Image (cartoon, rainbow, N blue to C red; front, side):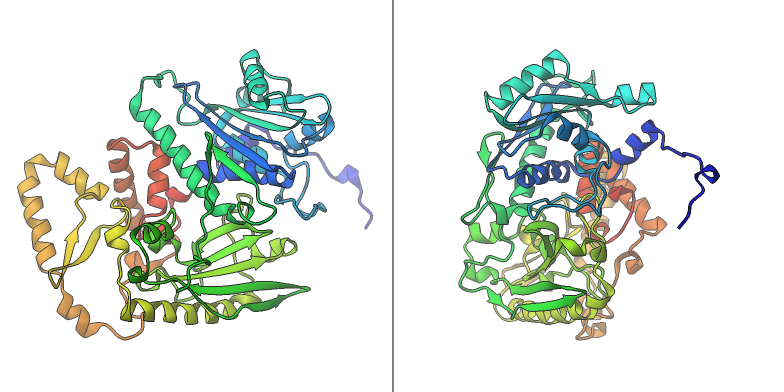
Length: 496
């Protein structure tokens, strides 16, 4: 095709606007750290250290690896936004796709990103300072770094000849003149973030933490333990036959598992099998790409499939070839996928069979216990069997209920009376009479729309305000709502 370039003009994006866009892709802290670990694994690192260091407003996070490292030119390319597109040919160990992971993940969490690297020769250092980019309106990449950051680099590389050090400073949510080293509440939030990151890495990189080629990942010196969502070593796990589904020139491997009921597990095994998001949040499909977990516990938007406690034991592994990224709609964060149309009926068939078998296990030998063992902040109701009777209680630990009881003192007696009335008049008989054997007529919160309607957003906003008032940071409050029923099934401000 012949192109007359005089008919075109350059419409380059504004650096400040681009930074704002990259910073707003919806990364959680743990997902952002996982993106950096991707780079370390792609560089064939055997040891990866994630350091969380509390220093009040000057707190920082670093990822250090002993991988192949980069030359000076390679480092500059790595620090350039979208230097490599999704069509770039990559090695079999490369977990990236868009060429923006390092930058977008880092900009979402920090105002200053410093990367130091060596491929066995001299160490090269480059720094993005978003204040400088925004003030200048230019992509000004600093050679080196400020003296304090250089001192951190030297300390973290610990005399190594090769490898990479990534440092985040001026952390979002923590870098403030109002945050001092003696602020115990914010400090606790910082270390809660570290613990959540450790758990997330154990889930996402479990396949890299086991076997002959295993890596070592540590968070603040503590080795990350792999989490197997399928309990592959337990003798009571039911494995359905593996299916290899054709997709273009490739194949997608699908293997379904039905986990043991609570009666067949020790308390420790049961608690561990629940995973980072709890039993309800971990049911569904697990999508892997080059052994890296992309999506953990989701029914992929398949028609008629949503999270229900009766299906808590159903977990299904999908391995997709990296060459089919576009077919699966893998996003920049490597945190969501959309199954290809050609495979949806097959995935729904496999899921239907797995869910049915999981429900059968719970019905005959198990018990629905997510509301008993799960996170007390997630559920508006708790359901227990005590002394031969089923009791339904409104959860006093739920943020909205707690806020109403604590701050609505003038109306507290009426509120408590209304709660007890609702608890004692659950319409069990009517529900039993109306309910069918399938799930098509089950009540659907807020209509079941994937995009949250205004009334759902209003409720979520009240929960958000309650969580913040009770001491959580804005980002932590959004993270909590993101996994809280029914908002975990909807799109709203908590996903942005």
